[in-house]
Image (cartoon, rainbow, N blue to C red; front, side, top):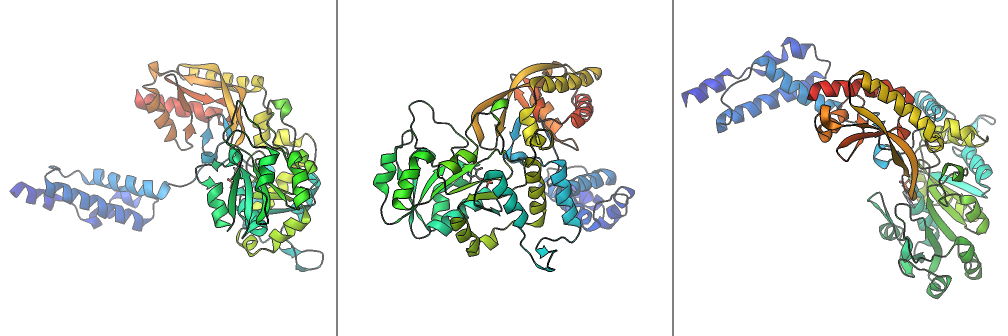
Length: 464
Ligand SMILES: *Cc1c(COP(=O)(O)O)cnc(C)c1O
């Protein structure tokens, strides 16, 4: 009992720790540190009272504990990482990286006043989206265009504006859940419309659509099955086939294509039907897609199609709630400008350059990193691997790539190595395959190679 009292009396005072050199020299906010000092001391007191702790650490050790806890709270948040997964559009890693020009454009308008809604010719109020809409019309050939916060918002707006109080026909094979939270039936409910599922999971024919049409139906909806592929005996109805039906019953065809490439990616091995040009020509009235998937721009939802329907959306009160901010406007404008000139996207838009990279270029990067790693005596080799586009684009399609494989013999077990790579200032995200730690080089920037080698060297020394 006496020793417990002695221990309790040994606990230093908050003020004493707050005036220690360690804490005085820290750049963390003082109130935050003080809070964690108090918590550290309270935990110590409880530990002594419960008998779990029988020694009071030195003041320096207590300061360290409090500073680490404060740093953890203060330092958590979004920051750049190195993507060694080979998944180009990784939804957990922020999807598309912006082009240099788009990122700079966003930064410029973020730091200064801008002509966001100011017409510089008349000196009066202007339209924030005028340039983007003109660009989208030119690039897609659509009659009209509109941009909202993301593609989920686009679907919400389209269905609310066009189908509220009515019903929407969708094929059972296209009832998707994307990214764990975008579920079509839930969206429909929010839009105040009734979902009419037609056909079966693997087969939906034109006749299935026609049988479901009655006076409640407002929209024929097609959804791109972005993150899975139904293979085998499948049959779906194309926009072209639906067009006659849509005309006969005067119903719009709305297509949620998810991801859209404004150029032909077939020559780079992506054959998925992600171009909207054919569908617009074949009779789709409205098509929506994400700005930060294959397009390679900022997060937003882009809607293109017939002016009549687009203007119904623009007038809807929901549009105001879903509108994009000035940084998005600037970044999207700059991204679309790149597409106006042939050949620029491949060198300027990271998503497109990562897809267009030849295996030789990737192998060269891998060889360079491999050399740097071996210089630090790390057991690394270059192996062939497969990357994917991700982000619900081109499911099931793989791109030949090369990875750095770091084998465990010298470097502890791979999961310990992987965890340590995650705790670097610029965290490195690889994957473990057959007991080796892999970094797919397709998604790694040339500029990061030296950093990766230094980090791996530090990790190896730390866990040896
Ligand atoms: C990705 C995707 C969405 C969601 O888009 P966000 O921009 O993430 O809101 C919706 N529909 C389809 C078909 C998709 O692929």
